[in-house]
Each structure stands twice: as C-alpha cells, then as structure tokens.
Length: 426
Image (cartoon, rainbow, N blue to C red; front, side, top):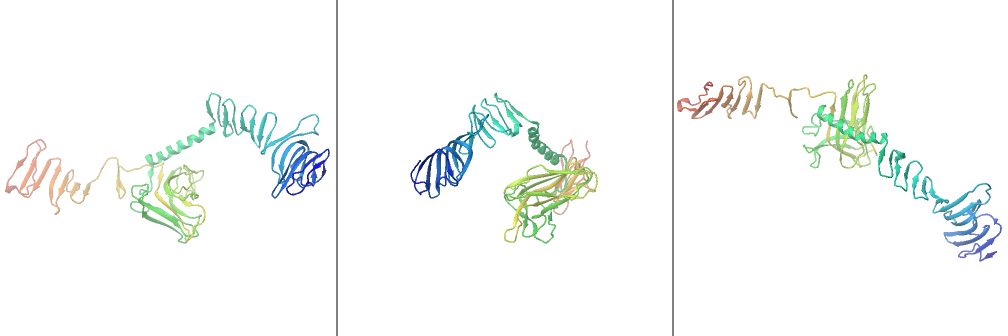
C-alpha cells in the first residue's frame, strides 16, 4: 500500500509492504523496503524513516536486520534500533545513535566504552570507574577509590630525567673546565666558527649589541643564512677536541624561530661514545637554553659540538636568522688547574701569587725593586708612599713623615725634604 507519490520532489509518501521490491535509492522509490517506510525528497535533502527492513546505506540493505531507522540519502545514520531476525541460537543487535553503538548494558564507539554503571574506558589505555578509581597512560599511572596514586617505574624514570639533567649541567658549570672563556662575547666570538660545509659564504656570524640579550655583555652573535648551505641552514661550531672518556657539555642560550630546531652534528667522538640533548632542542621564537652532552669513547677521536638550524632553506629574500647570547663548552673531566690565572677575561684564583702587580702605573705591589712592599708613585713615577715589612714611609714636598709600626711619628723641617729613611721597628 502506498499513500502519496513516491519519488516526487517535495512529496512525503508513506509505504506499507509485506515484501521488498526493486533496488537502488529508497527516497526515489527505486527500492521499496519491507515494513512501514516514510520518505522525503528535496534538493540536497532526502532520506527515509522505516519501521521494518533497515538500510546499510542510502541505496543498499542491511541484510537480515529489521527495526527502527532514520537515514539520509548520503548514508548518514541518525539512529537505528534493530536485530538480526535470521539468527538462531544467539542474538545479534545493531543499535546506533549519532554513530555510537549500544546494547542492553553499554554504549561504545571504536575503543571508547560507557558502561551501564557509569564507568568509561578506552580499552586498556585509560579508564574512569564509577567508584573513583582509574588509570591512564596504559596503566602506568593508576589510582584507587581512596585516591592513592601509583606510578610505574617508567614514569618515575621520566621524572628523574629532568633532575639528572639539572645535576649534570650544575656539575659542568661548577666543577668542569670552561674551554671557551668568553661565553657572552665581551671581547669577540669566543672561538665560534661558521658551520657551512658548502663554504659558499651564505652563512655569516656577526657579533652585535642587543639590549634585550639575557647576558651581562649585551652582545650577541647574529647567525644568518641567505642561500644554499649544508647541513640544512648551517650555523656555528666549536670543534672541541674529543679524548679518552672525556665528557664535553655544550651550553647555549639562543633565540631560534619557532618551528625550527637547533640540531647537533659531530665528527667521531670515539669508539663506544654516546651523546644526547639534556634539554629540548625546539626553537620557541624567544631566548631559551640548549644543552648537549657528549661522552667520548676509547679510540678514534676527532672534533665535536657543531650546531645548525633545520627547516626551510633561507634565501636572500627570506633569510633564516637566529641569535646566540651565550655559548661555550665545559670539560667535566678537567678542572681549572691554575692557582691563579689572570687574562683578558678575568682573574681565576685560589691564592694570589705574583712577583709584581701594577695598577694604572701608580700603584706597584711587589716587583724586583719593591719586593714585599706596596708603593704609590706620582705622575713623574716618583715614589710618594711605601709600605713594607719595616714600616710606612710617606714623602711630601716640604715634609717627611716617618712612622714606626708601634711608635710615634716624627716631623722634620726643610733639611729633611725628600728624605725617605725609615726608622727600624722597636
């Protein structure tokens, strides 16, 4: 029985049949299903609601299933409650709401399941139980109904990695020997060399001032790639020398564009050697610390700590530019072996031992002529005050003042002008 014009645009015919006929789309009437079927047909909007035989798609049948279904011509199933009436000795249901399947005690889609008791789970990956217990990370983190949390050994290991990294960096800076001693570029590039295996001049390293630099010098190295380079966009290197079981840690503070990474390269670090990042190597578009650790092997040594930036190749129109505010390498297997080191970068000392120190040519400490003394000179290099183990002698144009360590001062007149004799201690 049919009421209405099946297949007519704008019509909503009702069909009641005890058997199905035809093949094709239901809304056009090409296929007429078993049961009660109401169809609709408009431009880009057609489908059926059926109580009886259900569809697998807009133009096919789900064989053996009867029930209640709403489906559009383009195969979108809004709901279906159905059963396989051909089964004998067992049950098979096909129930769907918005793509979710369900039966008498749970609803699911792919690996997600919501139980009738309120528990929800994703197979063995995670679960939230109705008593408050659950687990995540494939069970590596779990908790009971009382809220007691348990971490698997693998989770603990990941947590301690960050602590170990901090310890290794602190050890490098506190106890290792800094191999390149001008890390903030006060006086130059600190041994930094352009890294570009193409050797075509497309990568440059320029020292320049930057008031925003996170260092004390406010100098940075600007690294720019304006054409073909290798590897990738090139960069800079130290070429630190590897050696038997040496541990070499590079510390860099750089501003690298987001979406690019600071990459590490090396020559042979030795047989059995190892190396790894102690920090993330991803660019952030802001200043960030990067630390790389090399543990040298036992033979076949070369140089290491070469750094470059990956990503799209820089060009003259769109160069790749990044900045370095701090860069050096620490040798953890060596220490500052000097009792006192004085160079252009500063004074590194335990106990000062020097034959002579001259400050602005006016103050002399020690020296061949003033051994064990401190002398102050005038602009003509004439000694005006001397402090030594015998006492203090001060000379003025018309007066000589002589002091004993435990005595009194004596004044002389013009006859003692420029006299510098010092009385012996009592």
